Image (tube, rainbow, N blue to C red; front, side, top):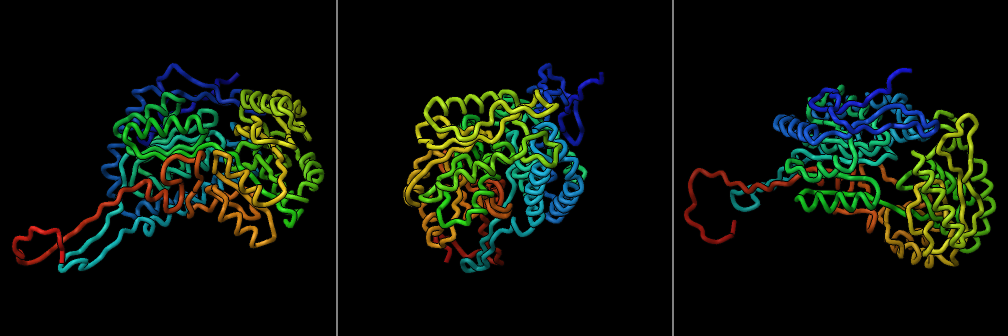
Length: 497
């Protein structure tokens, strides 16, 4: 039997075998086969990565915008050319289907392509003769060593939400990917080096909470970006803020989809099926609550029949609609919440528990699950299940739907299906959620717009991508300058006239 490969750290452009004594198995969720082992980096290794990034910043910050832009241009081609290999690695360790994994790589690629425009994204402002003989201008400069901590559910897209713009603006970056599926993230980082990033500009350290805390506490790290669960995100945000760092934390969600009776029935139901059960529900933007308005509730039997036709299988089965959950613990938690929903009185219309896939009986499979008559006090509504479980809530009017959703503490994403422009406009103006889809169930914006969750789904003033990300990874210096041949005498006022 061949030895299980051990995943290295990436420090100073070199793959480094960790000296840690703490390793975690990386498991194929369809078979429970151990496919790799990931190290929990030592404090000394983390300090080495930070010191290396700090040294690299001295020269990278002065690299021309053209140089940084060309690296991003090279990286987008390499990612495009290696989409298949990246997707295969995602599927092996995460379990999502290959088409879904390929789609994830495509969304990450959008951000890299956006970073190719850094020459225009990082422009300052200039005012000649703002006062007599005085010019005022701004410099948009990098912060220094920055870091990102990502969740397991998008091991390519989430790192792309962070490091391309961070390094393109002149920072050096330390990535801590999820310990559950780290290989594709490391592969992406290696492609960035191949694209021309100098050694030390992008380092990768692996680990769990201790590594994340070490990044938050380290005095030489200036900013932290986090995407993951609410519990972890709140802890990281508070810890990083206490240490005086900038921090953005995109966290948990309870995403609703409102279906009005005037919606295109075929479009609405098909889109809802995909949004609720795709990726086995392991998306922070997955639709987990459908709010059926008025006569739209009569469409429920049709929706159930569509959900029953979804194929649950291993990720490499290209006919599969959803694969396994990421771990046995995830499966146990999801099935436990399903049972709690039954115990609390919700009507279980479709039960995905007890599912077995031929030849993969050890897989972490849970099929599409649908509850009706769900109320706001039930655990299946209050908690982010992160599995293929959809709760149905029925209301009589759009106004009731808006009021119901606005009472939820989270504000990540929401959608409405309607063919009436007035209803859509009312919805977008009155809903208190950061990202809104109109006839689109998962409203993740394109990369040149910022990811804008709100309320309990986000901590920090800015989100990933777009203008907000450029602002997050940079600092603005304002310069007021006078160049004159002769002194103009003493002036004790603040006026610049």
